[in-house]
Amino acid sequence: MTAESNKRAIRRALVSVYDKTGLEDLARGLHEAGVELVSTGSTAGRISAAGLPVTKVEELTGFPECLDGRVKTLHPKVHAGILADLRLDSHRQQLGELGVEPFDLVVVNLYPFRETVASGATPDECVEQIDIGGPSMVRAAAKNHPSVAVVTSPARYADVLSAVQDGGFDLTTRKRLAAEAFRHTAAYDVAVASWFASEYAPVDESRFPDFLGATWDRARTLRYGENPHQPAALYTSTASIGGSAAGGGLAEAEQLHGKEMSYNNYTDTDAARRAAYDHSEPCVAIIKHANPCGIAVGADVAEAHRKAHACDPLSAFGGVIAVNRPVSREMAEQVAEIFTEVVVAPDYEEGALEALTKKKNIRVLRAPEAPAAPVEVKPIDGGALLQVADRLQAEGDDPANWTLASGEALSEAELAQLAFAWKACRAVKSNAILLAKDGASVGVGMGQVNRVDSAKLAVERAGVERAAGSFAASDAFFPFPDGLEILTGAGVRAVVQPGGSVRDEQVVEAANKAGVTMYFTGTRHFFH
Ligand SMILES: NC(=O)c1ncn([C@@H]2O[C@H](COP(=O)(O)O)[C@@H](O)[C@H]2O)c1NC=O
Image (tube, rainbow, N blue to C red; front, side, top):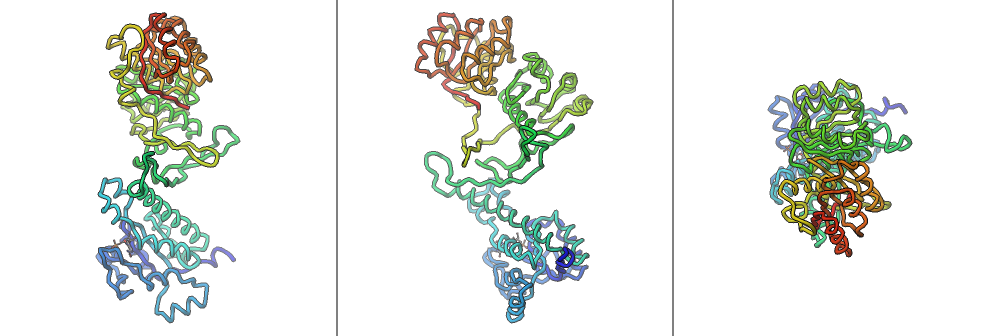
């Protein structure tokens, strides 16, 4: 059977929409094509205000809409008209006996539950915005797609109007519309279920709900994943995990220029944003393979970029740059001189885009908001790990709350230098050691399986001159004095680390022996 022969003419439509966008044009087009319109309260009101004939659902059912709209379409005369399988003689016959006319098209969109929750409404107001009749009609029509076409978005109205002129939707299209419809109600129910789980279900002291729901829409397929043999795609979330506003962030950043983002571009850009937004001053982070090859703050972003780039110019080649302020023209001109994969910033000042886009391939992204996901999810074989996102802590990350473990207390200016090193170190994969000077990283030791090697790497990358007098941070405690001794041997001015090792005493003794100031934060920032 051809798709043509599966077309089902549209003669009668049920329209019940909360979002009235495009409603008049849809109703007019349907009416002009000879379609009978049946509709609920204010939808019917809009249609007749446009001068078009419409039958109210209550006229059809002989039952008034009641209970503040909680019951409008929940009636056998509506649902039998949607659910009758018109391929079956028995169903046609029963409709005749019951005096029910079938519907060929159902156009419904639902009460704005997610938007109501996001607006900070009271629980009662949120509950009132749970649509009951709408999803029932959508699911019924989607189930009965051999006989009925279902539309849940104004974006589909143009398709409806051309189909109605063309003998109706074919079966393939009705199936596709049904799939869209079930996806729509599934996402809606996940949002409702997640809200109930977090608002009403008893949550134990773990603070994590029993049920977690999120739905993901494919935004685009990517050329490939981490490697060319791995197919990959980008998804955006319509319901958030952990309560932040869904959407936004890097996944929905606006690409202003350049080649398509790759999988690795996304992971590096994510890491770059994590690094840049830890600092209140203008900050630039340059990332390669999810690790910083330069993080710096400056009086402005151009200065911060020069300082970040100077940390490791060799590695910065082909890097991903994140900025926590709008990119200035001056910074853009500097970046344009260096082969760079991606620049991401909240915005671009006048002339900055022109300077950047001189390079054909550089990807330029605008992501206005700072990273804000409240939780992190990591898939593991057969499940997923969920944790509260690692953000800077009021207690352990504020130098005012650090404990002096060895040496003389630093001056305010020096303490600020050490605090910069500490925050920058948070962006380095563990085991992480970072040396900084003048608000810029100068040596980064990342991802080693022991802290001694990370320390050696940081010192080696800094070089003798830059390591001397630098401020060193370690993401976790030194289990032995040996890692610290690498740093003191290189002449660092001060060290900051969480403390808490059973051998802290030995580590403190080594710092004292070297005459180096050391602070304990009491907070660890592993990053894997
Ligand atoms: N209760 C019902 O029988 C019912 N039937 C349809 N609705 C919803 O009412 C809205 C349209 O109502 P109105 O035409 O009055 O603006 C639609 O979002 C539709 O999904 C209902 N409302 C809530 O469940």
